[in-house]
Image 1 (cartoon, rainbow, N blue to C red):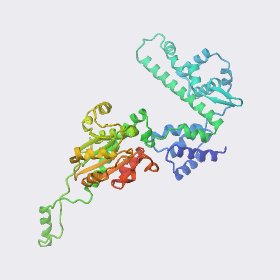
Image 2 (image 1 turned 45 degrees about the vertical axis):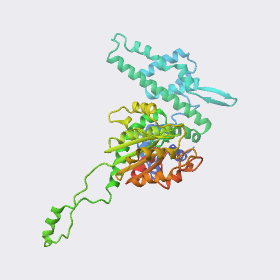
Image 3 (image 1 turned 30 degrees about the horizontal axis):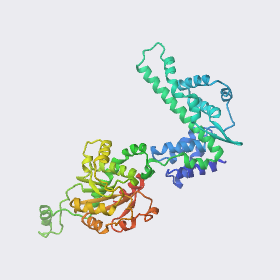
Image 4 (image 1 turned 60 degrees about the vertical axis):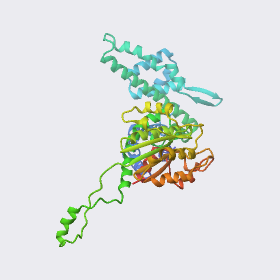
Length: 450
């Protein structure tokens, strides 16, 4: 494969993985290759990173794909040390690894990882075909069990529990992580050689955090998403405030108008008004908390928690087939994890366990209709799947008619709207409905409000 082919394939792989790379940026990267030494692999990596990576969050995925398309080694080309290590007993290999974890260079650690993958990571699947696994390498060497022996060696004659031990532990733990990453990267490279780089690229990298579907996030993703919530809440509050003020003029400033009229013989040619008082709008959040959108509900409740700091008055309501106000669980200063646990155990949002938007809207209008007024922005969050129950469109129309603004965020792809029990278009005819599958789309929605 030529360098041009690798460059084009690498850029396409980045786009497929969700990293935004424009045509101009791809050309910038190609120009950068003309002014660096292509033999220096790390220079090549940094040239691509400088021209193609826009956010720190994109860097891990970039590095994985770079290692696939520009591998540090090719199978079959081995160093002398790797050949020697093929015959050494496991105990000797573990001792060698312990030395590398303490003071080995990155090049030495990666070379050793390649040798160990070649020795322990290969399993014959069928004649002429082989599979590669990282777990068999790590199981054979068990690097995490080397800590005690390394500490005995390093801390000979020193007091245990002090700064020296802490420093040694950090160094060894860092070395173990780097060795595990090197093993994983080399296994991925070998699989790519056998199956094709394009195929492995599509499955090797998860989408960036801001492009992971809310309906597919994991607990680890949610914990990272918390850091994204507060900036989004501030921007949402700012956008709604701008829309609230748009077109409004303040009250007549009588004193300034009379003073200005003296220049025109007492005729008030120029009317002066007082600036409108700055204030934060009120917000009502109506959130589907059913199991079908549980991950999305979790994120939107995090957003609701953050919005409480940005608005004068926020009232949050959750529903499955009936509705309950959940504002009390998100008092300022409350731990958000505890609030989620209390909400699941104490809130009255489930009657029969099947989502029923129509009944939830009717119950909301009956019990909490006074929550919506001319200063209120109504935000509905849900997939508009109502198990073939009546949609109560007139009730929704009445509620949105009393609100200053109303928006509906749907976590499903637009192509799935109106399939099965979805009545997205019917609700969208009353409330503007926006596809909101990830943080990037939520941020775009917030920007569009301006």
